[in-house]
Image 1 (cartoon, helix red, strand yellow):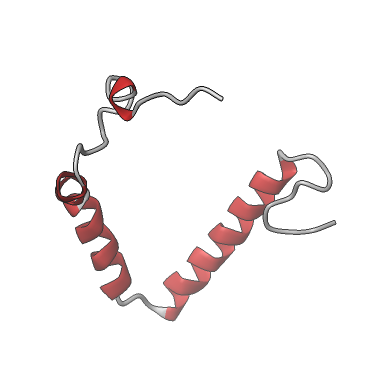
Image 2: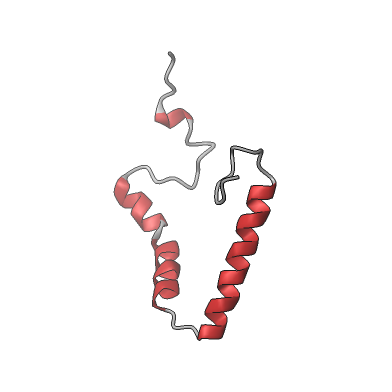
Length: 75
């Protein structure tokens, strides 16, 4: 089996950092966004809307997959 050195992929994976510290720095904006989402307080009505949306999303994803390869619901 042939392995491709990491440096050969850098032109294709420009979003990746060269070191763990560099990658952590690149991820800061996304980490701040997720932190705000976690800390966000929402009403019960908004929570119900989000649950309905998530259920709809799951059904759409599974409808595009073959039987026996469902992600969310098993048939």
